[in-house]
Length: 337
Image (cartoon, rainbow, N blue to C red):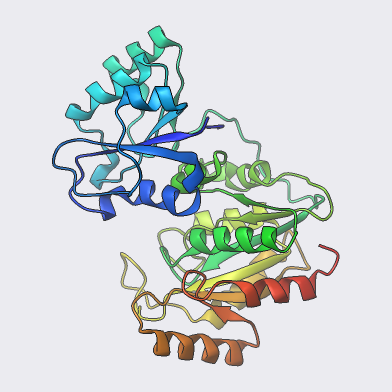
């Protein structure tokens, strides 16, 4: 799906910042796409961008109102429907990453029909994907993989895209999750694709490109996570990565939502190589991204330095310290990229 920008971010009346993490992630990485926020009374989240009404947003040139919230069950509260209908009637498209499909709500479907505006359910797609073929295609690809879910694969991919572009590389972030789609304006939420078509969907997300072009593909889940390994494996085969970065959160001992122990970085490297060689025999690791938000700075630097020395790969926290050393290694490994 292609989502028109710029955006008005609708935060509803969510109780805290975590409930608005989709909106906050968009602001972090695409601030120039976000012209304003619309909050209902009682909202406890703040994206720290201008407050706007729907009328203000239309006058400012907004194209899409993004429902930038997450909640248990992915439901749309009834008292938000009036604002969404107002946005559609004013000429804005509406997009959401919730599980509920906007068109299943009669008032919203009717407003979209009479206004001719688009409804984007980012967790779902109307694209018909082929099965993956695994045939080598032109262009270069980098995939972020993880020791667990929610360890920073999206933020790492975005940081890499930013640094690579700053170095003059032709690079594009490729989204495979709902927040990433809002950030890039394009992509597909892989976790909502039927299993047979996951690798084909990734081939569509990161298609054939110029030989020197890099697609930086957002990873999902972990090859070691019993809940999501199937998604991670299909993504790996479809991405056909030339390079990968392992993302890790060092304070965890168990994987999120299950009782399985966290795998080591080495285990993830070895498994990614073993599985990834099916579609790209030349796959190689080029760095480690460590999420150190729960460590003080001295400890964070120590953990990164120890990981780099042990694995003979550059290791850094992309948010705290940047990804310069990882891009240095990438340039050394792919000098023509």
